[in-house]
Length: 281
Image (cartoon, rainbow, N blue to C red):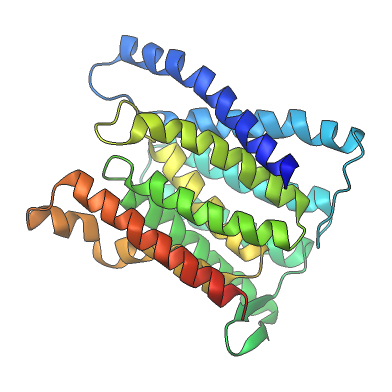
């Protein structure tokens, strides 16, 4: 655990160093609150992983995973980067591309990692066979768009994501998935540094590159761990937003932005605790 905590701290420090000149640069180019935090975090997390993972192996750290490590990392970073690039692509065909990317990731999970099960609390493990592919595609699509919808108030989406990632980090560490645990640690560290500037009143916004990437990647984390049902609970804030556009409804009845965000975080904490409990059943 000390290794993962050190990685988180290192990611936080690197992002903290990079983010201030990044914000200053964006402010010099455009008036108003700049957008682009997602691009920065995707870049930092990816580069740090490329640098640190080989070093960790050379230092003799024992790497464990239920999957072929190279295939698992290919899926993680294909999702993380490709959906981020999609967020930069402004076109009426973006929904089609999004669906194709989600299908591609699901096919990789099924064919390359041989994942075809979901863990249903109280019922046990269900083997879906090839039907895992459309289910996985739907889950990835749902969380991608749910995150994009949630990213409407300062700190709402990324604060909720931080809570989800802490829960899944615990599951990844206890399941001895070293590659995934390192990825989540880097992501959390970078996310905390970003949140300092994203809470109300935000000095930097995430942007669609970040929202599409982070939503899809969160779904893939849950699918890799075989905790699809727990994902729906731990990520319950995003599910609620997808169904009801909750934060917009609350704004219409007079709730102030910080009040909505803080209470969403509190709800997210309890959903994460409940989801962790379900994941153990």
